[in-house]
Length: 501
Ligand SMILES: [Zn+2]
Image (cartoon, rainbow, N blue to C red; front, top):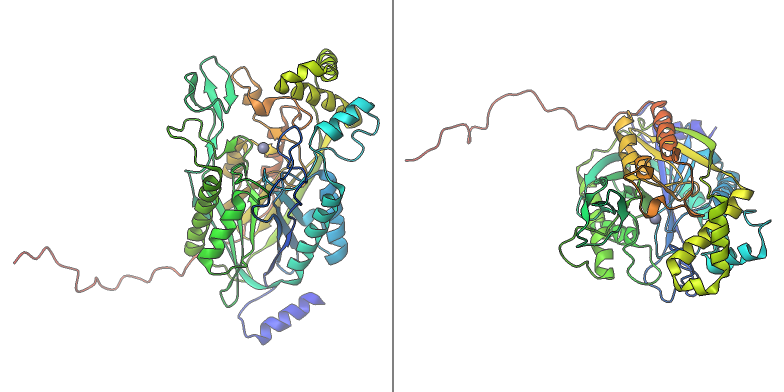
């Protein structure tokens, strides 16, 4: 019935379209944490002491008359599987968008609200010592904040759904190669280290690539007012300006708002495969910018590049932007520490004197926590999603995903625009390439912790699933301007040899 009414409205409006009309809506909600809440991003406890800029949930809802999808970007370090499922159920109940048609992606902001990586039940049967290590010595969720997060994600999607209007959409790639760097470097000893430090004489070179593509989706109403933008780029949101902050996606939004002249422009950011990518250049010849400056550089340049991309791309016909969705959910085993390693770690965490070596103590604590979590949950539920919007596909996974896999997915996808989205619909920690676990591998991301512990084929499994799901769908047409007119005559002022006298 609703579909029929849409067609009638379109015909009354005199627009020459057949079939269903593409509709889009955007909305945002505030999720700024309170001062005093935990600031996640490390393995211990850090608390917010000041406010810098707001954190938000931003949602886009697209509708081709047959299928409705929601793409949600959140200024948060990551989102848990449990919270994803809860919000999806609630969204479906409130506005009818199917749970599996909702992508919830974290920006990976390292200056955002509290969230802990455990799922309900992980520590129910753990010893008092392990419970204490998790609750009091690790980053933990704040129940009040978790409720706010859930409420605002749902409200943002419901509001975006209500805001849907007839729309045009266009996709493009910008290029930015000066703000992101591979943080893993090959060392003379044969291994690969994360952040070995600028000027380190043992560094041979970067161990992996970056992805300079800036994925952009622009959406306009039928009067060509820009309704909202989606941006996809691979870089850790660690350009923390000091205090509570959306991190560089905030300056990116600020820049796009300034350039477009729309001070309320919704900018949904979906993080690309950035497991080994940050704004830090370990081969830098000069000192790094101050935090506030860095925050402006990364987000400012990406916002400007996204706007440049929007200016050049063509807007599609409103009846030719097909939406489709594929998904796959399965379990992946964890890598487990040996019982000998667990025993040594237990001795260390109980011995206060060894806390002098904070790094060793922290990773011993992580070993103990992983051992407990693996008893409760030896396998981790993972989901890969492919959401088509016209000629573009968003391919998601729940990992901090190495950029090489993102590049591989883009290459193998038959879509003209492929946007890889990491830390979506759950969180499985770092998922490196299998090469990084080999004899020349190593580094921070390959460390076995309660956060990062999937078996080494996980990255390949995500890649293969993503490619397979994307390629099951048929890309919509890429909007083009009308073809050039046939040649008639050269410009009569300009068709002559050099005139010297
Ligand atoms: Zn990270």
